[in-house]
Image (cartoon, rainbow, N blue to C red; front, side):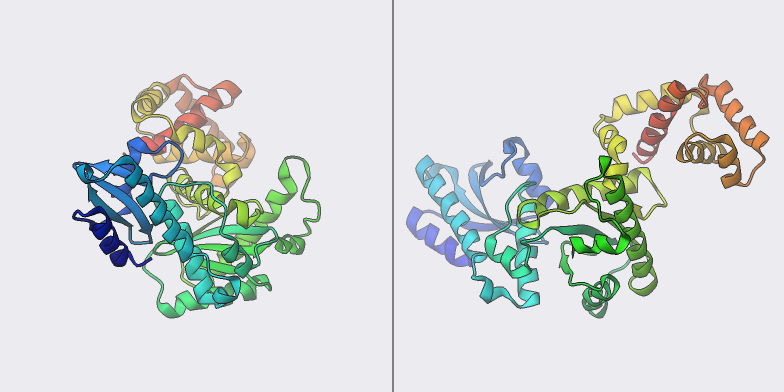
Length: 369
């Protein structure tokens, strides 16, 4: 979009001063938050001006500003329509015009960043982009982030080659923000894991296959590419219909994993259901619940914290927990009994175990704030 040309045209048509502005994504989201009701804001009142959303990229949001008292309601809607049309034309090239890998990746990158910048979580991928990538079949979406530093240009270009060699299949690699990539692999990747029945009850077979793929991919990336990184995966999707939604969900899974599961670098959405629910609790009730449960045991000492987390991870099995911690069974029982004396809760009892499990998850959030 040629924003300067559009600004000049609007200035002539409206016969008033029209300016172009820039906001970061956070600034735009904060300014438009009260007006967002599930659909993106195309224009907002900001002081004595009307701000029109023009486009967005990884840097931020580009806007057109018009004095509020120099534009009528009908004109406002016409400007919104004009900018929307310009955005659509920017990605409406014929598939034959965007076959270049770099160009089609840039087109998809720009579209995703624009939608995410507006707070959109559901949108259909433009047909030209979908056809250019061959998204007529289902794909498996991964989200990859690098933990430290920034990959060099050589590393950035090396990533698609590494992935195609690892998967032995064509994959799409789309950079999002700094150190963040969406990877789309064909659903046929599941065949290599022996997951031929994808419709089993509760998706257990499918989830096992995705865990296996993710584990191998993460190991390869850490050893042969950029070092420490975080990885998450989604169920297979129809990219044309659900790519944007899956990107939003993958980002949410990664954030929950980093908050609740420190030390883990692979995160799965089906293992974050309770964490997702708890993350919505306001800070004050969260802290109150934690203090009620732990009482004098807050803050927890590291031995107790490790023992409880391992105990829950191993389905409350005392013997297996002791083996995992390399301690005598009686030592573990002593720690659990000590915790019971301090809190009145016996984690070998189901009801008490549920309360303590929830409190442990909330404890990690409250101690970070």
